[in-house]
Structures are given as C-alpha cells and as structure tokens.
Length: 77
Image 1 (cartoon, rainbow, N blue to C red):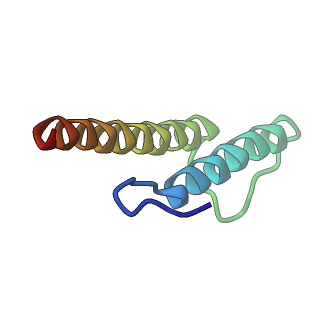
Image 2 (cartoon, one colour):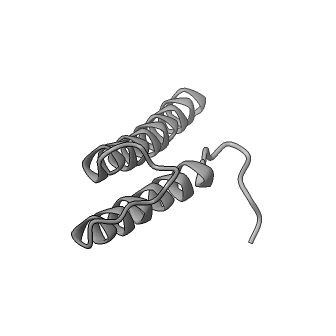
C-alpha cells in the first residue's frame, strides 16, 4: 500500500490518546484499592478529559485535511 502524502494522519495523537485513556482506567482501578500511580498527580477524570481532547484534535485535523483535499479537487476540475 502506498502512502498518499496529501492525506494527513497523526497516529501519535491517537496513540497518546489511547495511552492516556489506559492510564486513566488503570489509575481509577488503583484508586478503588486506595493506591495510585506515583507519577500521576491528577484525578482519573482529568486524564480522561485529556484523552478525549487529544482524540477530538485528531478528528478535527483529519476532517480539515479531507475538506481541503475536496476543495482542491473541485478547483482543479
């Protein structure tokens, strides 16, 4: 499969989003037993909010790129 250079993709945003989501779930599970991840100093809800924000950013960037590609195609022909 050849990669199209015009198509934007930020897999690092999705990866970071899923890692943050996993950390939020793991932190919440640990909090049920009165434990915590030592390097995490925020509530699991904040981690979840960050994961959602990263996923929304990835979706917005992808939709923008798709729209720009369609506009460019319409102008060309």
